[in-house]
Image (cartoon, rainbow, N blue to C red; front, side):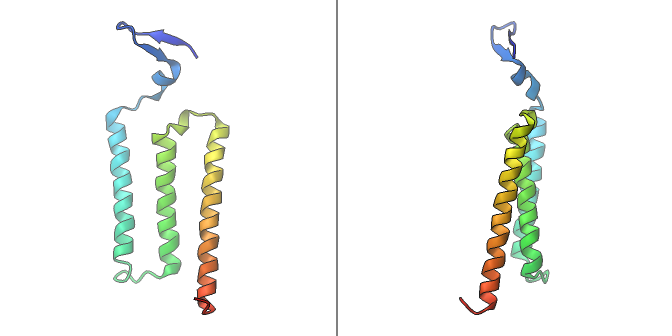
Amino acid sequence: MSVQSDHQGHAHTEATEHHGGGPTLYWTFAVILCLITLCEWMTFRFRLQLNLSNEVLVPLLLGLSAIKFTMVVGWYMHLRYDPGWLKKVFLAGLVMGGGTAIALIILIAHRASLGAF
């Protein structure tokens, strides 16, 4: 990684030069994240009016959350500039965390159906 100085004497590395995107792109992603959050809220708030069962509601909300997680990790944390192995670490965390959450939901639902609660 080389370090260069601009005409004002500020040091820049290749990594800082590589990021780019500008404020417009960050605002676009922020708006998209807000819209997804609004969809999540509206889905939960109006679930009875939409006749959404838990079998539909839970995977839908988990999917929307996974999209937001991927966007935040991939964009705001600049994961797209990191080595491939680091992307796999974050993906593994998402899969393990999501799998654990889904397994717990299934176990709790099964236990509730047996009348254990």
